[in-house]
Length: 124
Picture 1 (tube, rainbow, N blue to C red):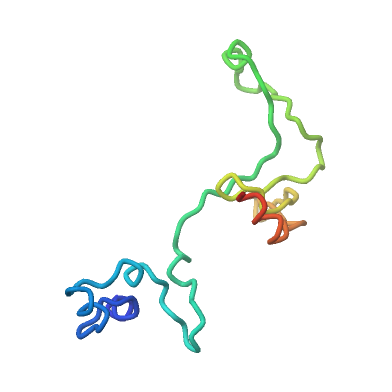
Picture 2: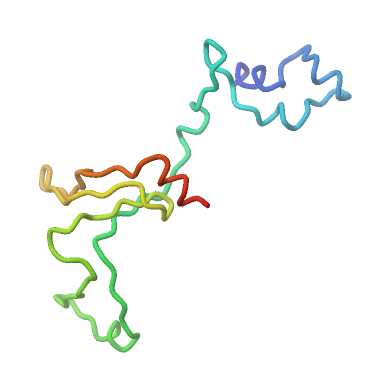
């Protein structure tokens, strides 16, 4: 942690800190640490949790229909069997895939990754 503080302007004898009255500038305190060779490292964001959703399909139902659901009820979805599933991260489409069973657990085999250009377009 001390190395990270030193990298972003929190170390002892920091010239930037003394130039700003003893406190590092805001930009310096949130800057990403540099990896070897001066390339910015993304290591500081790798542990941020994200919501990953696999969408089998959707259905629209009235409250009356939902209240009538019981164990064994079948809810019809908007997709057909065998159609690719959508994999969303924070509600943004990033891939499509298919259901697989591995060691008696369900999983998703990714068959199509959305291109970086398309992912950036979704953010706008």
